[in-house]
Every structure is written in structure tokens, then in C-alpha cells.
Length: 208
Image (cartoon, rainbow, N blue to C red; front, top):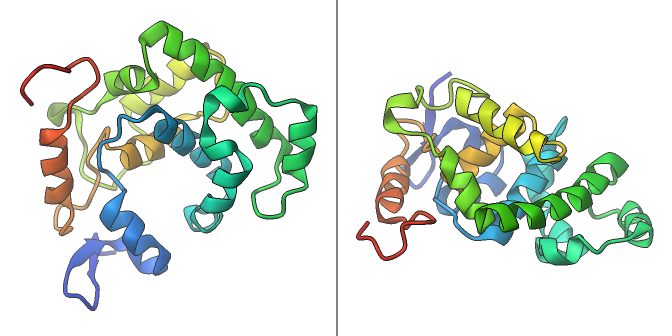
């Protein structure tokens, strides 16, 4: 399979975009661009957990419903959820109604609070696991890496759930910890440029 396909607009994109038109804007505007916002990071790792056993197409189509159901993925609020909230979520046909995954989000919200206390922010913790050029593999050839296994173990050690190495690598790809756009994708350089200008947590005050 070719690593890219060419859309009617003439731009080569990562081949996975060809599965549905829903993927185009997600790929062009979100996937791979570096993120340092804690709520966005928490949302993404939760949604990747929901994706386990499903397709990202399913989750992306329901993303707005997930955001509404989970208070915008504000982990401070989710950490206060009770059994009544679990029942509410299980009755919500607009999301994936999987008790284990719903309970994992609530558990992980509490673990996120602890991680902020430990590291200062979720971003400061996650960006410790940024892929370096010398450790990166050929784009879109693997579903896990040594770094994703390491991050998965670190999260599990801290009590996080639904954070296996495959889930974590998908999170890393999406949040810009690795630039996994195909080498001939028109958006690979855009992401590379964004990474150059990105102020990594802890680098405040430094010239990028």
C-alpha cells in the first residue's frame, strides 16, 4: 500500500485519510501538531482508550458527544464523578457505553490530579517522552515503540487504566510527541515546522 494518496485538491496525504472524509480536517489541522494543553491531552488519552477494539472513525464521529458527556474532559470535574454519573453515562447513546472504559476515565482523572501534583502539569510529564530524531522509526510502520512501552509502564505504575503501549503510541502520534506523517505527506513539513516553534513544558523563557 502506498503511504499517501492524492486528494482532489492535489495534496498528498497519509493514506489512512482515504477511509472517510471525516479524517481530512482531523489529519490536516490536528493530527501530529504538538499539544501542551492539559485538558486536550487528557481528552485524547481517554478517547484513545475508548477506541480500544474499535476504529478512530467511530470515536471521532462521537467526539462532540463525549465532550458534552464528560464536561469537556475537565479532569478536575470528572474526578468528582459518582455512581450516578456512571449510570448517566451508561444511558447516553451518543457515546461508547462501556462500563470499564467509563470507569477508567474517572479513575484516570484522579490519577491526572496526582500527576499534576507530581510533575507540575500533564504536559510536563508527557513531553518527557517525546521521540527524538535518532530514535524515530519509518513513519507509520509500527503500532508501538520502545518509548510508548516506557510511557505505558509509567502510567500504569501510577494507576492509570486503558493505557497500553498501542493506545499510548496512538496518543503520541496525535499529540505531536512524534511526527508520524508519511514522508511524502504534504502536512509532514507543516507539523515539523510547528514542532520547531513549539515551547515545550519547562522551556518557558527560552528561545525556541
